[in-house]
Length: 130
Image (cartoon, rainbow, N blue to C red; front, side, top):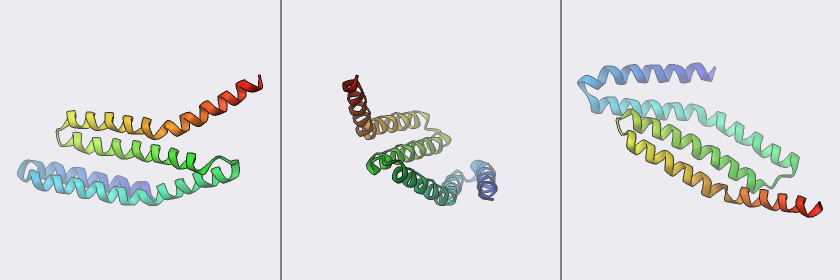
């Protein structure tokens, strides 16, 4: 089961970083980054399967595939920013992590503008029918 592997890597990484932090902080940083990369590699396959489901939904419902791609981008941006901000905060840079989260929100808003335009067009079409 993937979840058990991911939890195992996370626990081993956290414990190793904790033990190394007092004696060799630069090595603790490297261990933490390596553990984060391993966890990301584990979840890539699961994300790919999820994205395939989104594509199938778009085909079955007739939703424009570009809108589905935008939704996938928004989800990916959210996950990456949250993960990165967590790692940065773990290394003591909370203010930088907060700025990263703000930047991620601004980017998500900018990427979502075509979806907002489509929704407003759809609502305008419904209002014309009334």
